[in-house]
Length: 375
Image 1 (cartoon, rainbow, N blue to C red):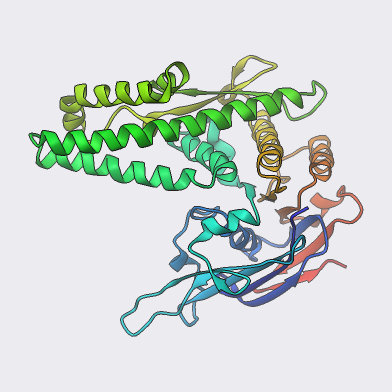
Image 2 (image 1 turned 90 degrees about the vertical axis):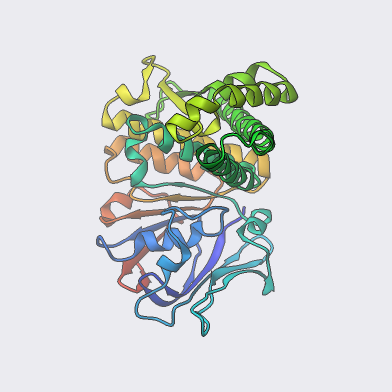
């Protein structure tokens, strides 16, 4: 099992310095609001591709006051690898270099960490996911894809850049047909690749959910599907044919997209549809408790999928996950987490929330800038 044996921080958020030894497979971080519990989860999330669980810039993670830089590192149990990430203090011109290291040697980016560790997380910001905007569900889906396909982030970023280029050309030079043809060819290739990666993850996740379905579970089974023009093309056509049709669609929609100031068709307009399977209703129509339970069930299924596809049981980060669960669901959650075979980090203000954790769980008290074992 891949697990964190040591977490070290320097000038990160609320921590001037921290050297924390970890012994448990289930790690519970207790402490008052604002003590720094989520900061620890955020530090761990930096070892996944992307921008971490808060989607913050690295410069925002630097402790104030400080020297303008920070460092975070983890030591892993299986092979003893040491991974490090951070920012150098600013140079004379105010520039700060990003740091990524594996066993002390420079790494190109956090993408290189995917050979050693994968991460899955759930934060309170996602509680309104099913009733929120489609963009929130797309970002949630892309995080699911990224955990099993680390290259998905690079493709998605390249697609966003190409879409911005097309929008600019339509706005400033709409008669430059060669420019538009070239950028639309790139958008079609990238867009179909992004949509295909999403579709594969949704299909695999659906299969995991079906295989582990349990009518007695307090975490109801979810049905998930992609909705969007490009998703329909990818589902019904070979990749090259889907690219050709998407490129034709982009050409046809140039006047409309110019008027809108953005590209209206593509993976950037897709949605993840989630339904409560037992009740056969959209997830957003369920009660607040049902939506939370559906979301937890999805994250548990995703952790199983990551372990199966990457052969790396992921680190699971759960921020304030138990606060609004009734005792039955809370006990069931801890039982399910114990069976995952992953290291799980949880936060909660009330230590009593973790009273049902199984033997061997590690409970830590977080106070501003410090972490100590719970007696």
